[in-house]
Image (cartoon, rainbow, N blue to C red):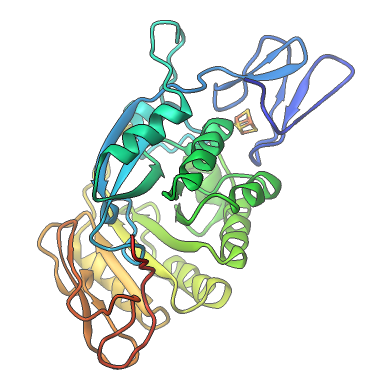
Length: 337
Ligand code: SF4
């Protein structure tokens, strides 16, 4: 399979234009993500159709709290990533790309959709676990078939993708959860190998597209938990994406190359209360038994709309259109399925 977004140069090198790295790749070499190889001037995918993990998950686990709450979604992921986060919570698959894929089974897009349709309470397919952008051509193919079959498509991503390929996805994706890893370019360069601005651009493009969008911020002690920086991030989300943007504050656990302590509850609640001054829907994730900061409250009348326990949601105050039963305020994407 040949990549959709690249340009050739006279020297035999190619420039991949899928993500903001814009890797210039010599013959027989791969780009930063290790999943795109220059073969005699053609940029080819090294692991098209390789699935590292698949599972039927609660949609809340993505996390998406305002998109079909209480439903399940068939989730798939491959290997590799275009970022190099030293704190990656999923590094076993995201920071590893198998060298020899001949022994691995290729799962066709049709087969993925067939598996998704086996489950009766499943709303669609989530592209998650590792970074779906690096499997762009594959997930696009799956998403096209899934959409024709009436399934929803959800992308859980770091947002490190160029504008043109992202805009093509809008026709087929229904919802996005984008990781915003910090609010300084210095952090992005030092701890992820990427840059902040392209992620902000992706967030703005997704908001403009009208597709469902939620944002996740993994709070890491001593790395990105500075309250002034958190305030800048929250202000930016409120002004550029809107006060109704869903923000998930996710608890960090020591992993991969960073062994900072687990995020204290106090840090999460401090950022939660700061965010609530500007944003209507803020949640704390990865913490069992946290209730108030996990429920959805109607911003207009204060009615409890959704009670959550872990990944399970109880739609106590919503009608079948996703509006508050008390005042009619529209909050959540739900359709008859
Ligand atoms: S998708 Fe991979 S090869 Fe292409 S620019 Fe990004 S990191 Fe480089």
